[in-house]
Amino acid sequence: ITTDKTTTTNNANNLESNLRTAQECFKDFITTIPIDMAMEILKMYLVFGGVADAPQGRGVLIPGSVEAFPQSIDGVRKVRERYGSTLLVPVAAIWPGFIHCILVNLVEFIFVLEGQLTREFEEDTEDHSNSEIMKLSSNNEMKTGLERKLYFLYFWVKYLLSKEFYHCLGWDGVINTEKLGGKKNDKWSPDQLLMLESNAPLKTLQMAQLPLNSLCDRCIIGGETIWSQDIASLLNDILGTDDRVIGNGIFGIQSDTAKKRKVKSESSSQQAKKSKHTIKSLMDINDDSNIERKENDSMNRNMTSLEDIE
Image 1 (tube, rainbow, N blue to C red):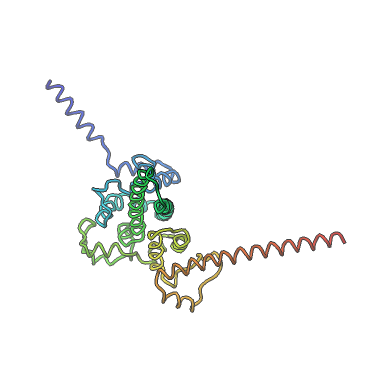
Image 2: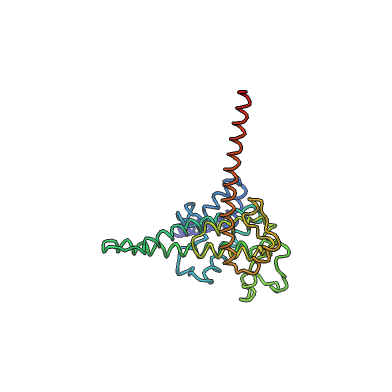
């Protein structure tokens, strides 16, 4: 019996010594998996789910436990502490393009969920018979889940645009480190947290090569709820009137000084509405130009054919 107890204890000690930390597993992951495959795996694991212990339709950045991670700023900070500095920051430090990838996919997933939420809302506003009460209750639960997902995804977008994220990456010029008093992230005061959670300088975000203008356009055109509208307002505030380019320069039209001054006097919501209308107008102009070019090309071909006949 003594021998059995000793053997069991030794086996337990050996097992404990063989257990690997999350950091060790992560190091092996990024050094052994090709970057294109690793990016896809991380994107699914963090955002969309369906990989490892992340359920389908919910990556680990969206916490499942309502009790442990309430839908509040405390819950946001708690899940950020778990995955922000321990996972997102180390990956971004090794693969700079990872920030761009995750940010774009966070916004795209918000569009998907907004579409689902809008459809559920429209169905719920219709008249339902008594036989559909159970289905209506299920839809309400589904909407609650969608709203929770959108809530956390929105704050992850804010995190990737925040001073805290780039400060943890060790980038220069993000904040005045003296204001932190040499404290680590688990010792920051409420005022320091609010300062770190504010927007990173535009220069920093440009160094990260984030598609701020095109994301703003996408949120204005494709967004369906307050979450994408808030992201558009956030990006408008970051870019300002001097760096906000409607259509991201695709249509070759830049705002002149007078237009910029006019836009500057408008609120963020008014800017968003104006941008949406302008982008759609530019698309119409672009389509009309394409049609006119096609007609001219057709006429030129017909003239050439007549000359050949003569």
